[in-house]
Length: 136
Image 1 (spheres, rainbow, N blue to C red):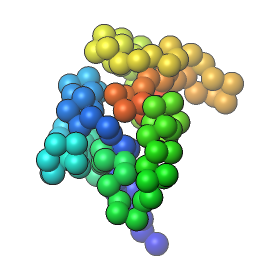
Image 2 (cartoon, rainbow, N blue to C red; image 1 turned 90 degrees about the horizontal axis):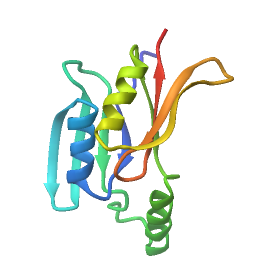
Image 3 (cartoon, one colour; image 1 turned 90 degrees about the vertical axis):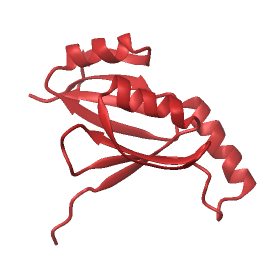
């Protein structure tokens, strides 16, 4: 098989705030933005590089989700336990400073982990955990 990762999905509860975070703070390019109001599906990815994308999507838009499931998703998003992603950079210190200066909620400052990586962590406007590892 010849498979690649095309797109991963993270939820948003405020498309404008999520767009500002991923575009303006992380520097991702917007590849598509469809829908209206809070029902927008926004695809972003590293600027100038095709391939893998992140789809920022309304979390409970699926008509098969029950009201109880919608409440659970909203509760998990509020706690920051619903979605997360792992990014990588060669300049962890510089990336950390830029994201922190952009007002993102810092979860963990850059540090060496016992499992052999140096990383930091933030939350995006929807509460998703964004871990950023330093590539060596």
